[in-house]
Image (cartoon, rainbow, N blue to C red; front, side, top):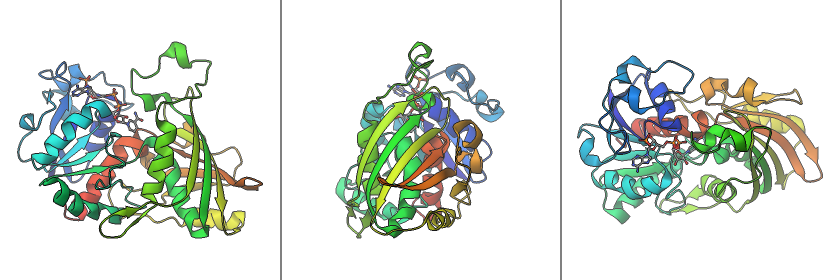
Length: 343
Ligand SMILES: NC(=O)c1ccc[n+]([C@@H]2O[C@H](COP(=O)([O-])OP(=O)(O)OC[C@H]3O[C@@H](n4cnc5c(N)ncnc54)[C@H](OP(=O)(O)O)[C@@H]3O)[C@@H](O)[C@H]2O)c1
């Protein structure tokens, strides 16, 4: 078994890690960390458990420790990180310096030249950037990132459309409240409302997409030159980000060819990887968050409503933001790191 630790284990994403790891065939939890306020308490007290399955017995009485390399056992092979990015910025490099491989959700360093930003089905080869990172930083460990939840919802479809000459993308999102963490949006703000602003989200979609779709030439990632313009909205759904995408292509595929390309999107032979990656719908009113966020155990992306418009090919896409968009994304990167011999 591969021994893993979760940093920020009490939070919204941390709890999803616990849920996903509780019956994982090759990863076992060796340590759970959180803030100094939670350290020293049993997990069941430190975490206000909100996931829709019971708190796993195996972790309920585990003592939460502080988020420092010294507090984590030496025999841990892989660290999953779901810390606020301001905290991750300070501590993740300490873990990498101490020799740990960190698969992180936090937004710090996603754009760094020597940090792999990876979706296993899209750009698994970017993981080899770890060699460059180790040379640059003198680390025995490594830092690998998954993209933001709104980016990961859209990029699998964009990677597929790239075969038709992807030139320009406009996207408008309808993002669930869990994407902001438990204390992110109050009920008074979001009930009966839509908030047409999510700090930093539009920039993340515009830049992370280009890095993910880029080519790794052995020493650096040449970012894709697609232009992405995003408008991000918070809506009163609990989980599942729905996105309306307009993609301008240099070729002129039919709607049927686009559906066929989505259906044939590349998959990975990893425990948590869905097959198919993209579940498509012919119905014009799908996908919907409540109906479709758990496709592929919450790891698939749903797409539907494909149509030709004067502004390009238009479609709707959806993914579960704390599963495929966060904990599941890091977990899948962890499985890829393990399979490719990086641990
Ligand atoms: N929610 C999503 O859909 C989503 C999607 C993609 C990426 N992300 C990213 O994932 C990260 C976690 O998000 P979240 O929604 O899970 O946040 P959250 O619910 O606020 O949880 C934050 C976690 O970090 C811990 N923490 C806070 N301050 C700390 C400190 N100074 N030292 C050590 N640990 C500290 C908290 O521990 P305590 O309980 O002790 O405070 C908690 O375990 C963020 O970077 C976020 O941007 C989230």
